[in-house]
Length: 207
Image 1 (cartoon, one colour):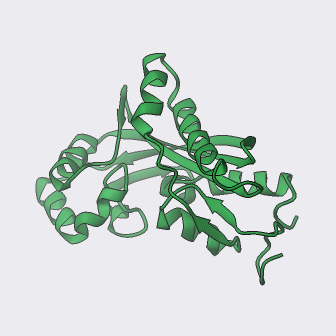
Image 2 (tube, helix red, strand yellow):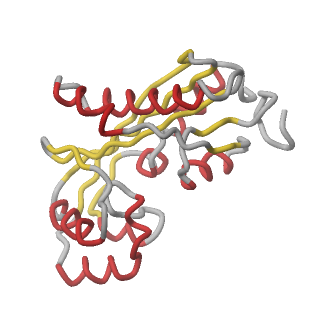
């Protein structure tokens, strides 16, 4: 066990991502974490799946698995966690905005609309998948005025580009919504409760 955490593995969990939000989620619940970006080309992985008509949940899970496997190959004997999130609105699958102009267009499109966030995880050791799963949250954006969108973007600036929906729920992003169905962690990018259950199932966390 590491320090005062509940973690039972001899080495910290490896998060196959550079995401500070996901790292902080895990550390906040007593799991020691090291991060290693996977280098996976997400568009290359998802393109054939989308062309085949795969569900958003299946695509998110495939991306999480690909990331975890890519890092697991480099780190034998380590427990690696991959995670990914996909946003869908109607028939559209959306990715992170490249700049603030695209973020403005994204918020304008989502205004008054209901959309889904599909967050997936994969737990891997030595190239073998120990567990995987996905959870979906449903969010309804209120009708946003152009003035609000402009002020919102100016207030958060480049930080919103790390969110697929161009919002930061833990900050001003809460003002965007009329309603949310789903847990905070899933919306933040990782189905934490499912991850914790999988870790306990594999005797990696105290029960």
